[in-house]
Length: 484
Image (cartoon, rainbow, N blue to C red; front, side, top):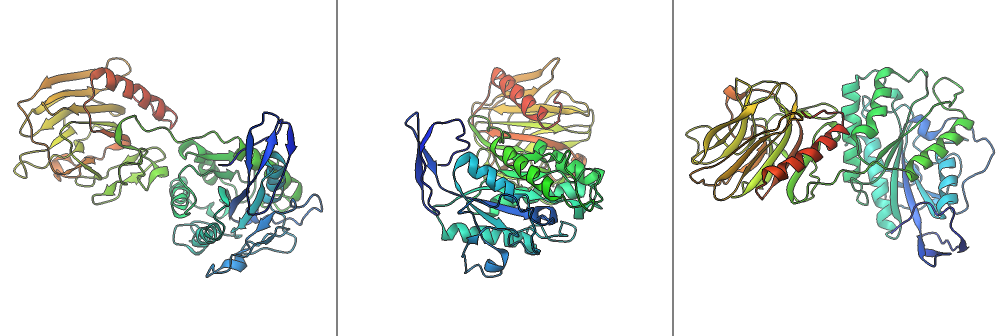
């Protein structure tokens, strides 16, 4: 367990020992855990901090660092040393100050914890230059150094990733840079053993008007906390530089304080999975790994070609290119999607195969007339639910073991629902899919755009679907998608 701020409490006893855990005794009599907290520092030169140390307050006593040169490339040596400017980043220069200095001062003052820093930034680096993509040297060093240090010190707590980068990707398009950055955020949380997808990731704006700042890279950085959970954006407003690229020493003091405030005040949590769901995915560039919100299902598998990603959806590019779950079709189940069909023929989800390829299978699909249909081979057959235009809709299909079904199109003005009972069905042994994972026909070669997919191993009533729909509208609104 760890804590955030304790300012305002009546602290009577403070004990701090590097690498150990002790407690504060506060006026309420409740123990507050104190320990050693680890922060990873990554990015390019503005994370290194190019201005010379200003001679002001230095790192708090007991602050440690794991210099790049000590661990790289084998990480058999996990010796930490006292933190002082410059920290041991890849290309540290004499006196380099860094925003981590004031961040650490403020964090120790606020919490009383001992801080260990892993300096892993390098000037002039980016995604275009193959530095920060998974597999690149700088990326792998950041992961390996963190894993080695945390393994060697199991009582320490990994707290957050502090990132500042973007200047070297100024020639990238917004789509290219956001795709690379957002994938890295998710992947580094997977690859660091002591991290989770809930581990805070704090990023700062670039120098306003600086020669490394463009509309594209600024837009991506601004959008990072909109589409990536447990992230925070640190403003660079009013900060100044000495060369129109690097923040000056006074600004790094302010920036460090802002980073600490952003970390301590982080309030951008992952949404909760739908209760009872056996698979729940939100799509977009921030979930290129297809991580399931429930933690029950394994990640989705690309059936053939990978989707194309926008900020807040994944577009399945053609027939047979759906995303396969690990969920074998249950005898009773519900599947829900937020999807824009783009008024194209498309299989939207389920287990249906082409005629003659099996006597079972179920699907939701969109036909040439823009009608949403359900199909249950060997049971209900084809049933039209209603019409959909080129907008995002919440749609659902619920079927129980007695072949009672509910087909559903959410609409803010008039929800469309069809119900009935089929003659009985045989559940398929195939896995449920998002998009076309089994049908593989050019007749359904459209490119639907998926923002959300949810699967249950229970049948939902119309009233229950109404409630899921309402929650989905809220989830999607936070991601700038209006659901009809």
